[in-house]
Image (cartoon, rainbow over all chains, first blue to last red; front, side, top):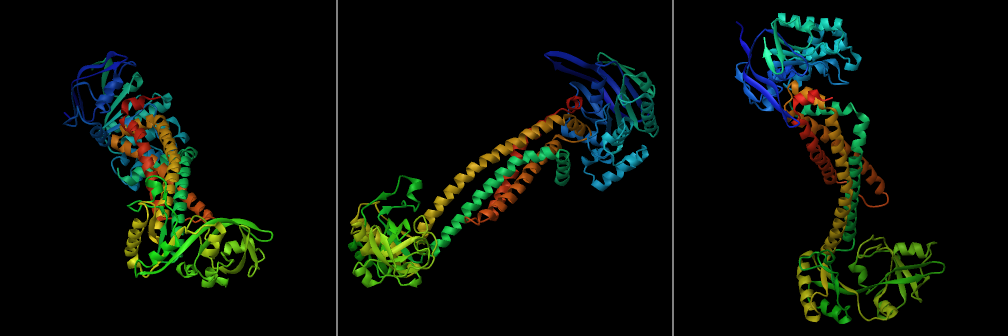
Length: 224
Length: 403
């Protein structure tokens, strides 16, 4: 058995929406191990994004205990979670979320700014990843000069640039045509084969099929 | 994240929106330029006045029949009511003061009246100064041509006049004045000489736009036997305070308290500098209001920026920017904006001062530049803190979801 990466113990998330208490995630126990390839599926509003935000330390649970990399991470300050996200977690979003009018290599190297890496080193590492992802001739292009698939590759390079332990991908093919989507999914498959933990959040069966372990979520309840 | 990369990231964000950034800093540019220009004019004026005072002759004490300064030496007009006047001085006062102290080398009466002077074709209202022949030595006057009036002229109340250079030019545009006639208050005087240029000072206005006549002649002209003030020459600088003291003691016996003042050159200078200083501060204060408006412009732009870039803030947080770094980044943007505005304002203000200097004394001081630089950086921080805090406090999840 591989090492535990993330452990949820009775983790729940509730918030107030217009004065009504919404339970986005009901008490959940979950263990994610290093090297796993997981899909989180569910219809929109089911709580799959909430689960991803909690697993990715973007949001604090309202109850329960979260252990990340062997370390209690339930009630950390925003600054502390930011440092963990910076070093150990990579995110890929449906809308790519690249900085506009900014060159591909600068976008890919963005997390390194926040780990205090020098500019030449940022450029070296970003360019290396962009080359690996097949964007060799486009390292100086801005997002508006790139196709959707190319933009998502830049976003994947950004998620990988600090060599994190886990990659979260939130509907990574949602804005792409099926052929490009397939190419992007092959990248994630390759990353998992290299040993990276990959967690996909999606509502598409085609995408979820790539994963080896499947979590389904409905009305805040998680099932294997 | 170190401060240099913080400013580098801020600069590249601002450059993505060049025209908007430029328009935002315009308010700061105008404010800083206005403040710089006014401070520069104030400094120049101060330097000009003190330069002129030095030219007036040293070791001189002036006795005035009005209370000009309070007991702490501050000008009365700025700490209390208007100057309180007493009666003018008599010839007896002049004689008595001269005998008060061996350190007093001269004590001469002086009267200044604004009178009408005419020549054939020209007419002006100007200062007519009446004194004794020693006035020339006490005020260190030198002559361009002719002579100053002498003891005999004063003793016999002769109708002779010495022109200041400005007056000479204006009343005798052809330059031919020696021996000519100038009519002062309908009484003809003969021009016997012209002084060298001395510059403004003494009282407000041009000291060179002046006619000097024997005090006795002036007294007849205005039908008065008193003097407006007494000028006392002291043997050296060390004795000045002692002389001031003994004159004060004498006048306290002779007159009602607080109806006179005995001041030396430095005190008079101090009075003028205080007036100019107050004016400069007042005017710069008004100019500083435009700086405030500029600061509000920066804040407004930063608030818009923070809202527009909500998703970017969310993304930056997701990839590892701490709230502190986000705060620092947006503060760096507003400081960079207002500092750039400040620098341009300093350049415009300095350039403007060079032009103004052709018409009016102006002096660019390092202190003024430093002040403007500091103030614009301060504006950036003060008006940037609210938008930057808003950005720092955003929840990454909500910011990423923002449409």
